Image (tube, rainbow, N blue to C red):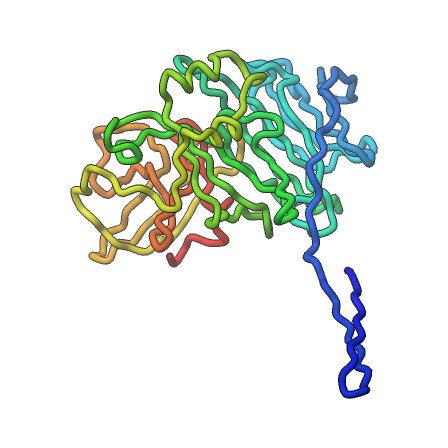
Length: 342
């Protein structure tokens, strides 16, 4: 808060004025924790831990001899949060392949812990897959389930970016998707997309004033990235290249829909654990049908017409699609406070 005082003279009268400029609370930049190191912890066969300050540390622990694993957050050696994790060692990701950060993302006075679990590298293009967990900063024993979402091509310092103008940390969710409508001259192609969000009230709110970034995978782009691992991923740098497209609304598709059907969401079921497959919606259509929709459902020729494979999910009024890839779990309630009744 800054106080300014001014004095003006007119008709031999002295008028004093006092004005206050009040700036909004600012979020802190994320500070990266220490490099994960092998640590001996009671009750666990093995562990790698990263210290994030003030007695907090994030550890990936091996919970069984079969290779089951979890992420454990400790405060002064006491467990405050546990998150299911992929197996202890999987193809393309070692036990120590995770990042831990700490900072006040939502300017509420408490510092969140951000965990990025690196979970594998795909064949072909070598796309890297990560799951991000945002853990509330207050640890009073009633810890809510962390907010989790997927990022493809995560890069350290590239997806959580402090904006000095807004004094907020903004989240760039990067992922790959195919389009036939962004570049009509070239037609169909693969694009790396980037959408901007803020963390607020345990949700990710889209920043609609910032455009969706889309860069087509051409030879020039392929020359900039390799098919290696997580150590050479620069999504923000790639997407702010002059050749990237900037979209303020979803482009109109070249192909037209076969049918349009309206309805209301009656029920929503989200995965409860890291290894659950996908989210589901039950929709009551305006013509009285009950439609069961599954995000990223595997193709099943035996399913009937009332079983929907949901491959896109967004806000029609803003022509805005949320990040939904075919290779990762999608949780709508990360972005929306409710779905039922809409």
